[in-house]
Figure 1 (cartoon, rainbow, N blue to C red):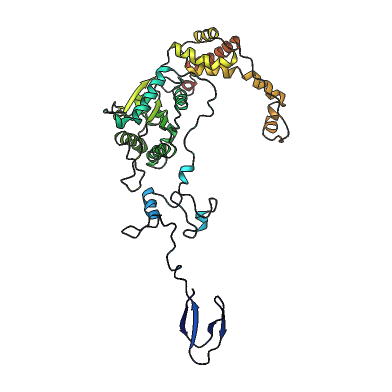
Figure 2: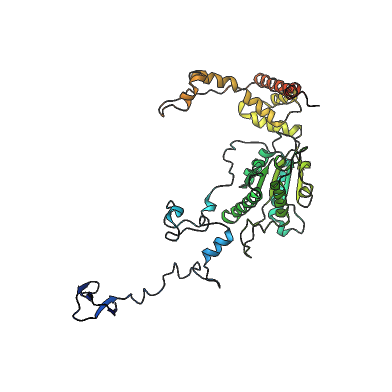
Length: 418
């Protein structure tokens, strides 16, 4: 039931209640006037809470609530922790997620890699698969093993031998959802940024395990291109920080900080790391020691090459004998050479298709600026034959020899000694 409170005011107008929720105004007959105001119900006097069971508004000893402490620990502004309308300006909060932003906004951004583009039946070398599967399994079972388990697996070998592709095939087979980095992310104009990025990606992979119930790992491709020392190349601060970050991850794989305050409950899942490269001897030696990195040299044997190439040409109707003839005709070539053979056979069919749409002069207007109801000519892929593959192979081999023999850089800079 509503209560009325009498207040003494200066002699101008008085407020007189006429009903439960309305008032009338009248001049007082004397110098003082009494005004009646309606007070809140006793139930409204209680402070409204989000929930009777919620601990979000619980204050600590310093009077700070959960959101404040979470923001300090996450080392961010309002985006990752939560944005409440009316607390910060709408220009910064935005309204694309509603009145209040989602507290898991950062984790909804997709940074992991899926392999839907790997359609088809590819061959995985048994030795390669055994090594990668063993490394991933050992790291996930490390707490049960009475042994020191290296966190990093370094896969190295010649160029174009399928190190990355074979690893991705194994990820697809095991259902692993990895976070993949490249050597180009190991340098930045800001000191310390690459090291922080590695720790963030490592923690992201840990969140995949924790929140999605999927296996994950961190993969860094061509690590020697970003951290290797070649001749007189200069070591930068970021190179040192990245090496130190990876060494620290190997030594403390469950306590990974990106600058936030430490919490006892902030324990990161152990995430295996896989790196690929051509020459691991160019990397800082303490990083690749046996306790931190398990090394695996990948050089496919003749049987592996034949099986991989046969699966590559299987849909084209190329027989096993024809595959063996191609491999024997071009020995000592990387696996990507045989993939380039098949790609080179498409050149004539592509040029014919360009002519069908009006030539090179009309390609832009016909391909990019056409109307939605305007169809392009049908592209007919070439029929793969052993003769076409051999012709493409000799063409690629000639280009390789020209690069090695001509060396125009010596012609341009004659003052440089051999």
